[in-house]
Amino acid sequence: NRLDIKNGCILRLTKAPGRCAEDLFKGIQSADAGVRCDSLKELATVSTDVTFAQEFISRDGHLLLVKIVEDSNELVLLRTFDNVIMTHTLTAFMELMDHGIVSWENLSSVFIKKIAGFVNAKPTDASIQQVSLDILENMVLSSNSLFLAVKHEVTMERLIAHLQVAAAVEHLSLVPLQEQREILHNLRQAAFETESENSLSHERRRSLCAKEFKKLGFSNNSNPGQDLVRTPPGLLALDTMNYFATRYPDAYSRFVLENSSREDKHECPFARSSIQLTLILCEILRIGEPPSETGSDYHPIFFSQDRLLEELFCGCIQLLNKTWKEMRATQEDFDKVMQVVREQITRTLSSKPTSLELFKNKVNALNYSEILKLRQTERLHQEETLAPPVLELKERLKPELLELIRQQRLNRLCQGTKFRKISSRRRQDKLWYCRLSPNHKMLHYGDVEEDVENPPIEALQEKIPVADIKSLLTGKDCPHMKENKGKQNKEVLDLAFSITYDVEEYSLNFIAPSRTDFCLWTDGLSVLLGREMSSESMRSELEILLSMEIKLRLLDLENVTIPDSAPVIPKPPSNYNFCYDFSQTEQ
Image (cartoon, helix red, strand yellow):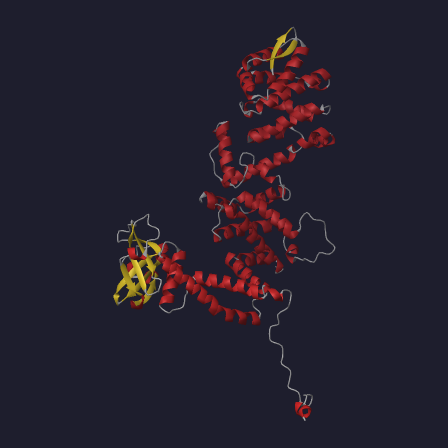
């Protein structure tokens, strides 16, 4: 909408934003109260357009609105017409400031007192009250200095009284918002030693705060309070974080700084982890739920410690960081880590620890490796694979499945693999290929180009009879690892293997492309040499195949209890007189 003023009337015209801004600027200063009111009303509408807002602010139009507020008195709230003008003034001001063109910190203390006065005044119009609370809320979110100024001016008694006014209810987040903001900034300042913020510009300070809140692990780093909206845990998560930071400041700083110095993908986000951990504790301990007459969980630890929830959180957040490192987790693994932590807490509480110290000792001993072992054991019990008849069946199935794995390994050797040559200068620019002949009697190998994926066996000029292979060596026992002793890293050592043939001084040396290829080749060569396969890949595959085969065999026995031992064979009868005598029939 473009505006023009003629004879005290505002007309809707198509006009450039600059001209529109100029006309409204004049209308607001008009001596005619009706024109002034209509101009402010239209300003509140068109200020939502950013182009118009830029033009109006460039003419110091926002300062004109500030002056209207500063020059007002308590009679504004008593006279209906003045009340309407002030409502339009504050609404237009709020719309202009929402574009972020002008900093909130440029506002005078007089303006802040006036806005606070509209909130504190008893005969308050609901519309003025609503937009005044909007303005104060934005001030609080803008900077710490404005937060303190608003906190000083707005009385708690009046805010509580506003609860009786329906229009103000949605804006009364201001009270917890003030406390919440103060705690959030305390968390930030306790974690990072920053330069004096008072000497920084508004934009620089806002940028610094956002950066540090991101390091703390908040998702919404420009307004971290938004991370606490979900209930549960809501503000309880902020309370637990604050308790940890104030009760154990060294542990808090160590957690934050340790993770902020890691790579982005490997850092454990403190805030996000704390919020989720608080939720987990609420769910485990049923915090927020009504008492249950049928509940059977009893935790003696509750009678040994004051502020148990907060102390449990402090111990468990450090456990979470420890588990995160044990799992070598990244941001994508966040949910997996939280599942493990939930399990650690649940298992430890199920043992009914009688003190907080005992809980900490037990939960820290229950590391990620132990959780995996327990899961595996329970899975085996659940599948009844530890029952003696099932174990016996597994032993009978093993030879057949091992033979299946052997054939797979030999087939893989027949397909062949491309290897890299590593010279004494550790250059990796030459490639060679090795494969087993279809009759399993020859190893063929030779140099290949980078773009050759699967060369025919005839293209590989060198060969070694399998019958001439004497031994298989791995790791540091390989000749090419001994030649470069002390120069090879662990990753290369884990991929190195060699075969010796003819006489001991001849060897064919390999560096596998991956750990999987290493397992496939060492297993396959072991099979050729008549030895047992021993790789971790073979053990894993055997376990998977056994589990699948057992499940298939036990399908018909679902929900049938398998006895630990075979039924007892009854004793033979004392006589066999009950048998039919066929000889008499023949006679």
